[in-house]
Length: 222
Figure (cartoon, rainbow, N blue to C red):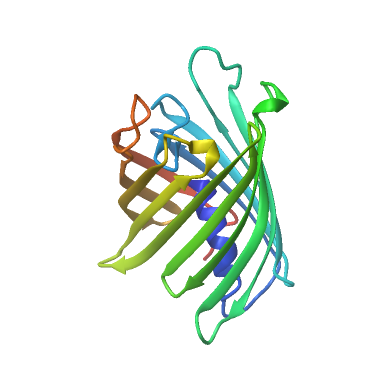
């Protein structure tokens, strides 16, 4: 949950009414680490932590960490992602752009498990679209496209997401994932409940799941 929020926040930074350098720290507790519709932690609860530094120029850097459990045969026990990018836009038009790169690493496992992606996205008001390209997943190309919306409604933020994984790396396992959820802010805490579906993926990875998360972003705003 934090990882997607950091990626979206960088685009929103570009259309903020007053740009300024900012460092944020976001811890979270979730009932499952969901990534593009697939569990990364054997559908178990886990702690996650995100850090992000956004500069006045629009350049940002970030890091994100979570426990992982890929089952027998994998030595990976936690994931560390490092990202850097550039966000810019037009605040009057509520239009933002975002490009960057992210490196997914698993320090307790072989470096052969590490993957990097480059991405580009556009935000218009409460809508956001993004394309992620991984040139080397076991020497093959993987692509992920997504569309998101964050809609304020009756004191909640309704989150809508749809994404599609394809490319040679997904040959035979191309799949659509989507989620519908709601976030409620209670003081400094954000409580999120979402329904995730990736049933068109064959095998145990395809699923329906409800995921609950509680997070906060520091420093707290008054």
